[in-house]
Figure 1 (cartoon, helix red, strand yellow):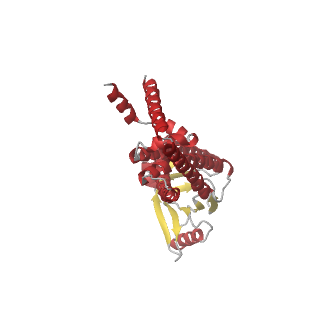
Figure 2 (cartoon, rainbow, N blue to C red; figure 1 turned 180 degrees about the vertical axis):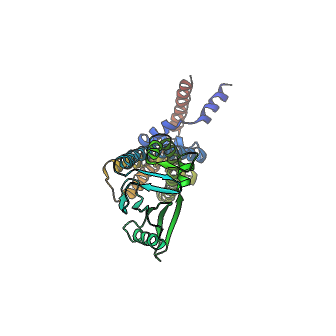
Figure 3 (cartoon, rainbow, N blue to C red; figure 1 turned 60 degrees about the vertical axis):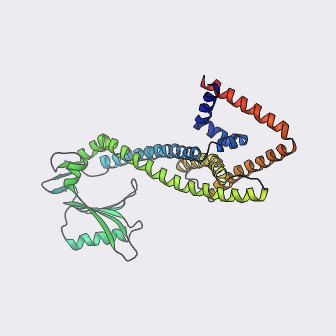
Length: 327
C-alpha cells in the first residue's frame, strides 16, 4: 500500500514553479526533471509561454488604454463638433482638414465633408499612398475610406466604412445617427471595455503562437547541438532526454526576454544581438548539465558500490520530502 502511494507521488512530478526555480538555479535537478519525460517537459514549455504571453498582453492592454485616453482627449478638445444625420456628416469646419494620426498609428488623415467629386477622392487616395506610411483614412460626408496598403505596383487597397455601420454596430445605437458626444461617451465607457477585451484575446493568441513557434525552434536547435555535445563527451543520453533538458535550459533566457520586453517598452532600448545571447545562455545551461552527467557517470564507474548506496539514500530522501509536502 505504501509502495503504491510513493508511486502516485512520483507520478505527480515536480510542480511548475519549482521547475522554474530549479531550471534557473539547480543544475543537479535537471536529470530528475528530464526523467519525467517529453510530455511533461512540453507541458512545462506551454505553461511558461502562456505565462509570458499573459504578462506581455497585460502590458499591451495597458498601452492600449493609454492610447485610448490620448485619443479621447484629442477628440474632445481638438476635433471640431460633428454630427451624422440624414445620411450626411456635418462638421463645424468647411475647409479640408489634413493631419497625421500619432496615437493609433493609422497614418495620414484627410477630412472633407463637402466634396462628392470622385476625382477629388481619388486624389486623396493617391496623396495618402505617397505619404511616408502609405496608409491613412479619408473622412467624407457619407462614408470613411481607409487606405490599408499600397503595393509596389502602386495598387491602392482600401476599406469603406459606412456611418450607419459606425452608429448601429460600433456605437450600438438604434438609429443611423451619432454625434461627437456619442463617440466620446462610447470610448469612455462600453467601447473601452469592448476594445480592451477583444485586444487582450488577440494579444494572448498572437503572442502565444509567436513565442511558442520561435521557442520550439530554439529547443530543437539546442537539442541537435546538445546531441553533438553528447557524442563528443561520450555520454550515453537519449535524444528525448536532451530535448527535455533543452526546454528547461531556456527558462532563464525566456525570463530575460520578458525583462527585455518590459525595458524596451519603458525606455525604447534595443539589444542588437539579443537572440544570439538567448540561445547562448540556453546552450551554457545545457552543456553544464551534460558535463555534470559526464562527471557523475565517471564517479559511478570509479566507485560503483558507494554510488548505489548514495542513489538509494537520495531516493529515500526524495520520497520522504515528497511525503512531507503532501501532508
